[in-house]
Image 1: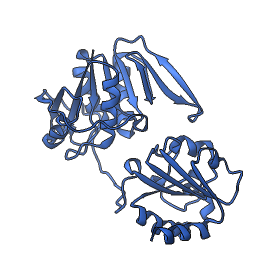
Image 2 (image 1 turned 180 degrees about the vertical axis):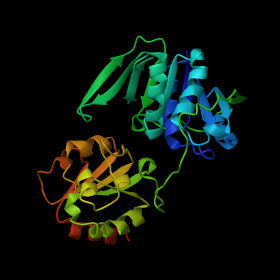
Image 3 (image 1 turned 60 degrees about the vertical axis):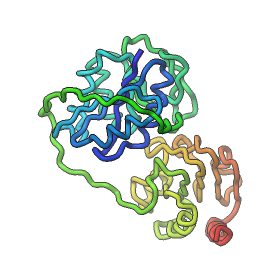
Length: 309
């Protein structure tokens, strides 16, 4: 058995979630190969080659692969698929765009957002907003899998894999890259941050989110929000943590003014340590919190900042 991991990258840097996917691939048994499809992506290939557990890095370099268009990347994966028992990608927007196309062309069932590998053909994945775990066994000859990064530790450095160039497929001509708008922030990226400070409807307004900024600054944390806060227009959509937002599992998650709806818990309950601040002692967030503070967030947060100072 040999597993192929589709690397997520920006042609300069390997995205952290790829390291979690490599861990999942290694647990499937056999060697792990990584496909780096892009343009001018030699630096990414070098980074992938240094990942522990990777036996080989395949590089497909062509201008039409530069922007990760799903049609072209999927075609590149299909050109190599015959050599692999497992094909894996992160359960990110990138992976969710590419792998369903691969699974459809291979006429196999995709297994989505796995959080555990029980055996080479059996996997666990959350269902019902994370309230239940389904164990899925696949009899397909090729397992096409997206990996929820929060379910697996990131693979460490220490590898010395061979780097091999493969022929790039032709441009499918089915889509073209128009543009990309990226949110810019001096804070850590939300899904990869070790500490996250999130606010909910209890913040009351977008201006009140400024109360959380000193706390996030002291901790070097990313800032997030519940769906209720996003829907209310308090903060941008890319702050949303939850089933329909971003899935996070930092070392420390601080939930401020968040009641703890199922949708939100599905996106953060795998955090290593959860601290909840809410004036309602019956709030569902306290059911998953390691530490809970019942009180007015407008008094508790400044007091925390003062203590940290």
